[in-house]
Length: 401
Image (cartoon, rainbow, N blue to C red; front, side):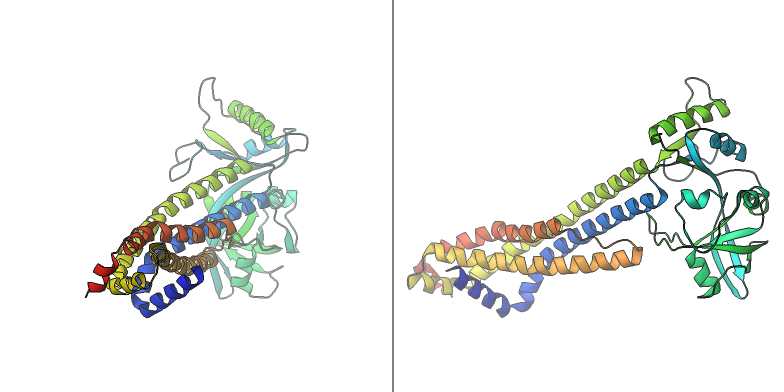
């Protein structure tokens, strides 16, 4: 009986192709939106985790100002100095310390130029940030301290300035500074927010401070925790040290913050999950709209086929068979829409992932749930029209014009 009902459902759907497609559209849009948003959200979470893992699970980051996101977080707060970094480097809890100062500049080689971010730091930066070298070498401690005009570049900068050629030993101009390339980083790809991590130039911090920023400010200090200490030990010891150096009294709030990168990763992943959940809930409303559309078109179908239903009942079909026929038709219609929606959602997620440079991370449980939910929508919203068809009086149905 079910096989015959499915065959009749396909015949009815194909007989009214345009109407069937428009009826399925709400289901298609709803399922596609949910699949796309969940998949992009999971890809973003994976990207965040990968970015933090690439920096290292034992790395702490000190920044001036109260912890928070958004503009103005540390605008009016005292910045760090290189003496602060030197003091932290003397702590037993600190295995490596890398102060950083950031700037933006136009980098020029020959007729090629690129606007990129400049990071001023010391010889520990590459190891703390987990940068490995494709060619060349790192700064020495003496070169970093003296501000020797050497620089390390990422693969994106190399491609824009040198193409496939080796940049080692070549002089480039960073703003007004002539700088020799001594190292080329291995590619890292996109970061937690889709930014190109390979679009970077690293120079000695004293050189960036003097020649690009015109001050002695340190924007952040990265600390790799020594073996035998936990990150919580590191946070506690560093906070005590910095409070003493910055003369913060008892009961006064810190004017700096120390971030554990694993904590940051967990927070960003949680934010991604909440946003994806909220957007998916909004997108799921279109499934409700699609279900109402299914009910509407099935009611129209019952009205149009009243005489056909009357003939079937008159020649011996039971009310249960008629009910099954219209329920199966509604479920087939929604499953068609769900299948198309899943394919469209995965395609949109793949395109968004390629554009945002995040992993394509489809979830089999979510896809299965979307497919099952499509069937449930067909059953729920197809039941009333099917019941109405099954309850028709054969004689009255045969009289219907």
